Length: 415
Image (tube, rainbow, N blue to C red):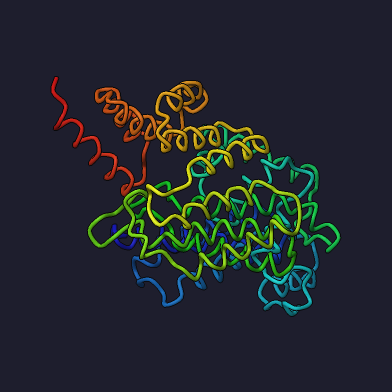
């Protein structure tokens, strides 16, 4: 298999694995067998596509083969059962959905499976991590970054979650409508992390992953129609406001353009207006939550006509409110960055110094330290922090930007 073909298979698997797995789980509620069947289908694709070429509908090909592999596995487990049982299993797997979307408790297969995987028998962190891997196609490294833990720790968390599902007999079934609100926090967390991964793709050539961004916004839109609650509106507003700036984050010649240097004329005014409207609805509906606060921060960015006119004081206040709701070191780092952007460099330095032990594995921390050190005139310190950030970056666009900053400092720094 050529490198181009291998990359093509990887892209298809990356984009479609969650959707295919969702379809398999919707028909047979065993996560391990569904994952194994999908993996077998990918192995078959790597062997057959090199000989026959990539099919017109690669995702459909993978789903068909995965279903066949799953049927084979079920046959092996049901050898002692009657032929009638086997035929029933085959029919349930190969038939199209027999229940109309309008009759389903949740009117979207992918969203139904999100609610299904967010089972209350698991801790919320385990629910979110497992759903991100099984249905959203993220790998353990990407999920670990979202939770600010090591890849090893995340793999262990995923293994424990699967083991608990198997031993506790947790069924992959759609919850009743009355049970949906209980699972909503985990579902929102999953959609939020899907969008976060799209906004700064962990690995690869591109800065962002448009497929994940669009899927997260689509899921948020469907969810808001299903449950028009304040927290859902806040999350959808947050994603739309962030996404409104996506076209300005890169150009034909520059892979990554930071917010400070973006051409604001390229921002999507329609997404901004819709996001602002949703945010206003969310604030009017219920208590303020973390999604509304983050949406409000993003709204302040898009309201400013320039970087210099950004209301950093108000952004600081919002980050303080967010920290009270979610006291995490990442939120504290963002608050420190806002403090630095307002010109309070020494205060920001003290805040970042206090976070160094908690964020040793967090690449944005070192990038922020490098920027702050440069503003303070500590050029060698900035160079060292850029070295650390570059070493931790797997995204090529971000790495190229950091290397450019690094070279600029090295070329002007006199030893």
